[in-house]
Image 1 (cartoon, rainbow, N blue to C red):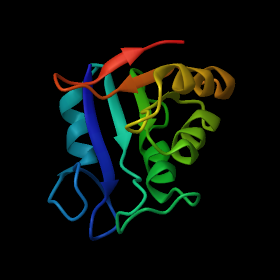
Image 2 (cartoon, helix red, strand yellow; image 1 turned 45 degrees about the vertical axis):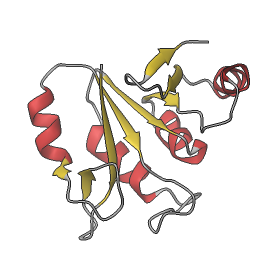
Image 3 (cartoon, helix red, strand yellow; image 1 turned 180 degrees about the vertical axis):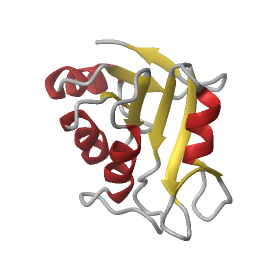
Image 4 (tube, rainbow, N blue to C red; image 1 turned 30 degrees about the vertical axis):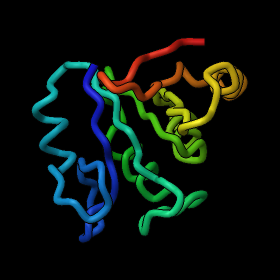
Length: 131
């Protein structure tokens, strides 16, 4: 499973970059290179960062448009507004529990909100946990 962070670049296009303001690879290139592989796109809509925009969720809406009709993709985020945009558009979704949130609490939200699972950050890479 490949996890790719997504945010809006300075020109308003979707780029794959973890940090705000960092140069990123265009989403179109990542989609092309992924082929049929399973990819998790992590919407980086983090409170306190300059591009945080919940509940408007511009990144989530743009990502939904870019992923329409594509198989083998999951949209994940710490921001539940963003993953609910993707879920409501029919995409597979996952919650990324913020630091300090117990996995049991995260899974309770995932179950109630009808997401596919949690993408739990760990030092060796994220771990998928299904409800």
